[in-house]
Length: 593
Image (spheres, helix red, strand yellow):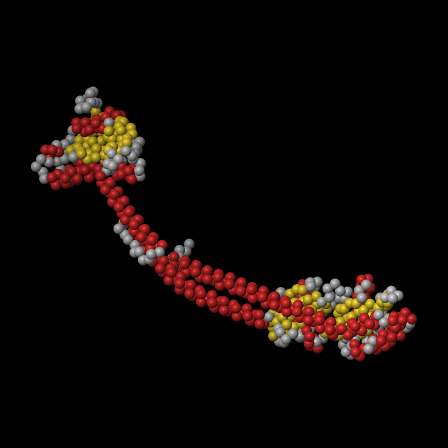
């Protein structure tokens, strides 16, 4: 696993945060820009559709007005009722309808549908057709619409139909119908219908906006818009047919509207408005195609500015993070180094306090902690010097309190034979030097056998086995320790200038009161009882370089170290004679002795 420094981690975090912030800001800004742009375009498209309908209404108003007048004309009703020839009916219609004031040219078509929803046939050129009458698809669609109008009793209806020109080109026509009805006699005669060109690309300037929007009409699966290339027109037609037909207002997603205009390729937003919802004629849609070149340019500009500002912010954040991490990493490294020194028990170490913030407080607390640990270590060292280390550990852990408990222990006393006569005339510093050398070597042996040095009394050592901790084999440890103390003294006599020292050791095993004796302000850990007194008395009776043990110790250790019984001993403080045993030294020790 890769281990990174604090400075590197902080720098990476700052870079990631700035990067995420820039990304989120860019995403939200682009979404807001697109939503705003889409709302503006949608409103503009609907306004264009309303404007188209208004203009269409104004342009066709004279025709609608003439149709309404003709549909209620008594003369026209009479022609429909009295004349059997359709030609006469059409002539009557043209006689009452001033086509010169109603239509722009002779491209307009006129049709009369009777009450049975059939065309009145004519070859009059003013009707817009002279041969093959009644065989064109648009006429069937017109009859379908009037059939619906007959059932619904709608008086008039407008719509759109496509008519093929002689050249085979589809031309969009607006259709206006009016019911022919005699209110007085309540007679329904049929419908009048006028079809006139509604839109042919550039010819109709009303739906050609000066903005980025191009408008057209979608009827009968065809889009009427001359600005589009054939491929683009087919693409829009396909999108509308597949996704949008049947909705009152909708927009094709931009990603589905990559259209080409004027030899340039830009995304366009394609919108549509249903012009005749619920009408009898085929659905007609006002289609608006908005050029998104400017919107795309704005998005690109927004991206560039956001990324530039994000890059600048990242550079500033990088510089700040490096400066901040430098200010943080130095105190942290100093604290890490300081903890290593504390780990190595160098409690005199100090870390600089560089600031007054939390790091400064941490450094101050660390230095105070180091001072406290140093004092605790000094106390521990002093305590270890004035008492046994095992007892010191128990005291530091708070496990020893004022008072005692009865425990089975083994007690060992060891003193120097003839110490008074040996030190007579010896300078006190030399006496201390001799005792320190002797006690040091003896204490080392005691610790090897898990003994506890209770006290030093002049030339005498008192050792406890089994308190404050029992090791289950305390009497065996005591005997082995005594044997090695004798052996160690033999070896020391061969190397030390103090080579005339002989020791005697006494060991007793039994119950004793073990605990802290003294006051709440000053106490010592020791053991009291008959077992202690017996060990001290056996030590006093032990010959030089010999070990005397009591019967309880002999029973516990006879299988491990051989011992011989000695004559019963009369000891001070004991009313009965004491059976004691003397350890048999090994052969090498005997020769040394």
